[in-house]
Image (cartoon, rainbow, N blue to C red; front, top):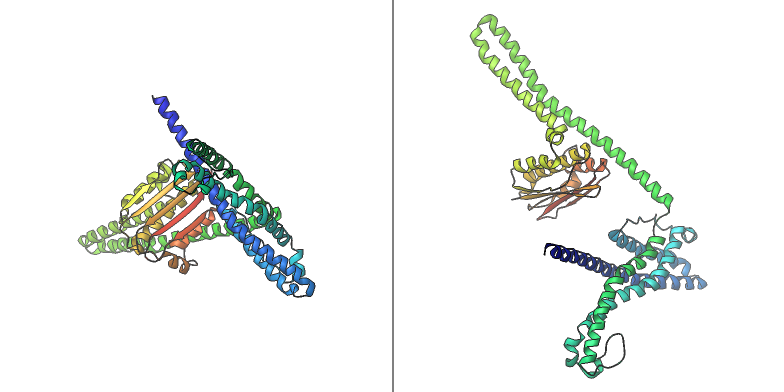
Length: 426
């Protein structure tokens, strides 16, 4: 029985994955169909402008037509990026017609317009009509008697169904078409996307140059984050611990002078000096913990985040199961992100609760903090983008130093959701 239940569960999971892939494929085909329609319009406009060049008018219209083709191509790049690997757009279309026609990216976009207007359009139409016709035939036996005789025909043949035997045959064929549609949809979606990924992707040299620029910016961000962290530690030591130690020194000097006059006066001064020394020690420990929390070294990131959630003044729910261990710097950054986000929740959000979610997906660590507060944190983020090392600007700088991603969604009225993705570094 247990083996049978396991086989059924495995089959159900496999069927769910197949259905999910088919739904994603149909969605991509629908999006590709919309882009293909725009490609047809852009291609016709380019062709009209090219023909108009015979009378001279087209030379003025053609640059605008090429920019329209670029707009449609950028829409396709955005669609392909949402469904897979990022497709980076090229530089703007040159203003001069001769330079625009000599641009490799423009010529490749014109080639893609031809492919999208033919192959992409056909596949998009098939991607929409095939499942609809399959569903129509699969349910044929339920409704064929309720329509006029001229409509009692399957979608794949012109003959008229006269009896129940024919209706059941159409329904069985409809189920076969449903299976075929589910099976071929992912292949159709990949085939529809292939011209865009082949023709709209930048050259390898462009990818490398942009990656070098990105790594240069990441290195600058890492240096900025390091400098900001040093400034924060210096401020904490200067404004807190150093003042306490100076107070201890002054009190001990006063107590030493009091001993020569009246030993009874020295006792309160020594007590105050001891209190100041203890406070300085507490602040020094706090600074040390802020550099790298000891719980990260002794236990795990999940345990450290559990402590943050438990001590948050705003009720916080933590979901951080089975995340394993990452590089120490990555765990420290994730801890800082959650700590700073919860601090902002307490100070600014007026929230009644918050949720912290941490997931390990392959070689990436995903951290999300969401609250039910008043929102508006995006405006504060824009105003603090050049600020110091704390708050949202500090989170952004630390994440960028790890070559991670940072997303903040906070409409006025809430909710606020902060999402960070970090490479695990292992």
